[in-house]
Image (cartoon, rainbow over all chains, first blue to last red; front, side, top):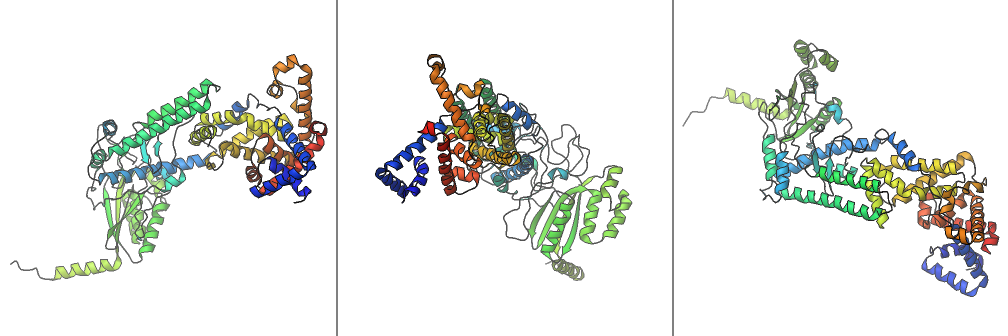
Length: 444
Length: 194
């Protein structure tokens, strides 16, 4: 390599950025050339002069200025945080349902952490159901607008009749949920801010996607009770693997303790004691807040019962009336797409449950006038339904919400749409007709 | 990962959760280094202060997208470098030499000088002060792209690959640019370099 080329390598050689072969070549050239060695020395001296410059300190008010600028933007200009909070809340709810259901189906496990179980017991009763049943909530419709922007998690199912997890409304202030993930436990808490910042732990996007819908979705029969009520789910959760909760809780506590220790070491004595103490206090507070959070915020597997506010002391909300409608389809994929489009358009929380034989059930809860509108849409008898709705509620389909707002709040109903194959329906009708026509079998 | 980077990671996680206090601590941990780096690239102190503040605010806004592929400081510094480049485009080259911007004030003087030298060997302290100013002048007179790589390598200590990633150019370009930058500096500091 010529000297000019060698000179071009000197800086990189000095900085240790040459490969093995190049380095040896430069060293050979240096050994053979005093000029090159002088050049290297001059380059080294130049770099040292720059490195010897004293560090310029930041102005004393830089941090306050940054914090003031951030405070003005907090919560408003971090859409990623706001959006992912919603996603995380919904994913946490879905994951918790799946976890509880999974645990409930396992054989009973010995309770290995009494404290955790006690914590479960003490918070076994859900603070409130996911539906808008609090006294302060006068809105009859499901607060589906709260779920706007939340992605539904679909079951990994090759079947066309994919089971969709219900979209649940996040619980109100004061209720704490715990969501388990493969990597960590997310603590989703709402409450007053601490030190000007809310403490929320969002599931990361990848973890949110991993949330599974609830398994074993109960099929509500027309007018019948759900297969499992909130109490039985709670009890089963208690009997479940409480060691899991304990381990997770312990792990979370250890993680937070480890954080404290690490920060302690990293910060050292030179840091302002107030800042350090503040951060450690925050961590400790979070650790304490994480302790009783494994209360199963029980979501009844049935569609959320949008009922009037429960009376004081009532254990569970009373489900509203149920309307079941049987509808036939010819094209399954199209039917599913239509149903989903209609429900999404109406911003409703719903669940699709296959029940075999090409049949599936769609459950949702909504105000009665809108239920009529939906039935009309699916059944194709729009005019008939319109007339009926107008008679009963005095509203037109075009402006159901406006009319509902003007009149007394329409009661919410649980709507169960049972879809069957048209040819199966025809065959069933023919079979029933044949049975009616046939003479009764003589008793033996 | 060093302990410093580990502590940064924890604070970043806290800050990503919405803990503004954690981000404040990140600012405190890195404000001096960041400001120093920016000020060496942008001669005017007021501009450097504004750019440093803007870099932190931008980092806060973008924190959700930080995935820890690099250290937090490297990521923060890349934000700062882009701001400096934009600033230069708006205001023209920063080669309007103003060595006085580095003078005066205890901030600029305190760290590099030994107080004992001031008292015992005042001529030595003066000589060092003069040398410092000469080096600063030489850096300030460099072309913008040369100044950037000199600051990133010899003041911030980034390796060539990191510099290349921050600047969005190949590592070979960094190598050649740094070589030419040092040649140019040597020309400016002949009496110091020898």
